Amino acid sequence: MRACHDSGILLPKEVVVKAAESWRDLQGPAGGWSYGPKNNSAYGSMTAGAIAALTICDYILENDWKKDAVLAAGLGWLANTFIVTDNPHRPGPHHFYYLYAVERAGILYGTDKIGRFDWYREGASYLIINQFDDGSWNKKPVDTCFAILFLRKSTRPLVASVDRKPGQ
Image (cartoon, rainbow, N blue to C red; front, side, top):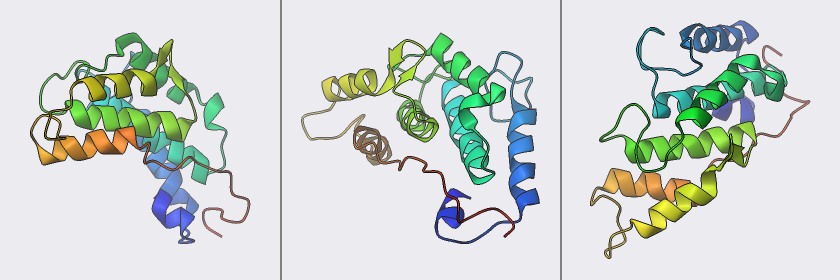
């Protein structure tokens, strides 16, 4: 949705509103998100991804995402569970995807800290220490790609736009 919006492809406002409502409806009671019904156990990568997606919806709708209580609750969940050594509440193969999701959430929301944590400094330190001599992470191309995306801060920040509004 953001790529369409930023390139001048205007989505009907009701589409963006519906997407935002869906993210809001799927948030769990503790503030996190899972991949599925909101009664599933929330975990890091999905919560960071949901924060990024809902921030984009607010941006397109020209809402102040810094005043969005749902996003604040999501960031609170991330702050309470923040680690860089694994995907909170879902350890295993999606660790590097989680780090990239944190990068997207932090940059899109526009924050250097998640709670008391400097998400970039801690994530970058972890990645630099854990890079293999051959330049890879976890000896997997996909994990290496996610690590590089994180380290490069590859996500473009959101900039308020007065000339592109949904449905116009």
